[in-house]
Length: 115
Figure 1 (cartoon, rainbow, N blue to C red):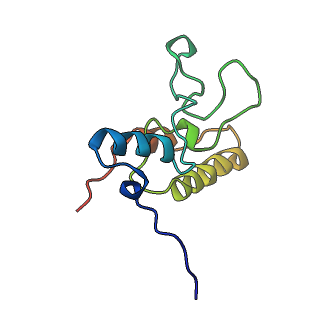
Figure 2: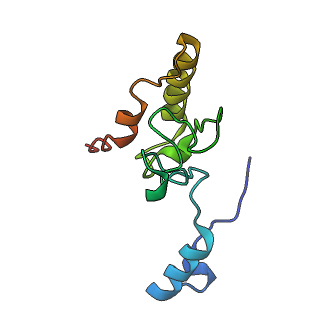
């Protein structure tokens, strides 16, 4: 049998909305689903870090193939979309030419509505 203390912010003095907001701000985190730190786009002067083929602007031979190129956090875990992107990037490198088919379109696609 596993016993644990119940975590209830109201039991820790969060009896008001402001106290609950402070508790949430101090305890919530992204769940390690960090996205959006390596913006995809054609122009590094506009803030883009990688191009549509995941090549880092201004650095020969370097690509970013992770969730940092996603513009916003997904509606779920980032693992499967990153795997799809990595498989497409690998296929582009193996085929030669380095073209990563479909990643830019997939990254820009809006998240599906939840039922």
